[in-house]
Image (cartoon, rainbow, N blue to C red; front, side):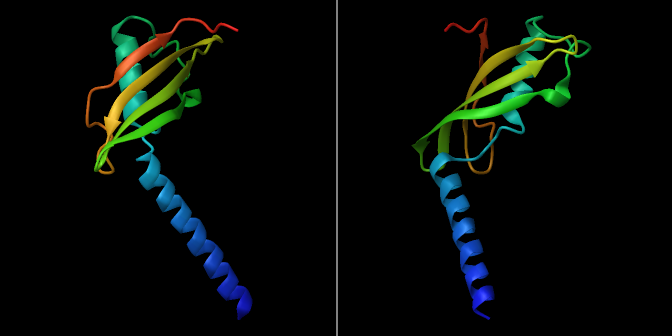
Length: 117
C-alpha cells in the first residue's frame, strides 16, 4: 500500500510542477502559431517554397516567455526549416499569447542570415 501512496505523491508532485511551469512561462505554442506564421511570412517573402522544404524536420523552440499581463505572455521562438537538398533557414518569431489563444497578436518574424562565432 505504501508503494501506491508514494507513486501517487510523486505523480501529483510532477503534475503540480508541470502546471506551475505552464503558469510561470505561459502556454507552449511551439507546435502551432509561431511556426505556421513564420512559414507563411518566409514563403510570401520568396525565401522558401513548399517544394524545397522538408517540413517534417521543422523544429520550433521557445527561447523566452515573459508575463506582461494577467493572462498574457510575450514570447520568442526559434523556428528552423530544413531543405530537402540540405541546409535550411532559421527565423525568430515574436508574439503575445494567452492560456486560451496563442495568436493574441501578429507574429513578427526575423530571419537569421548567418551565425557568427
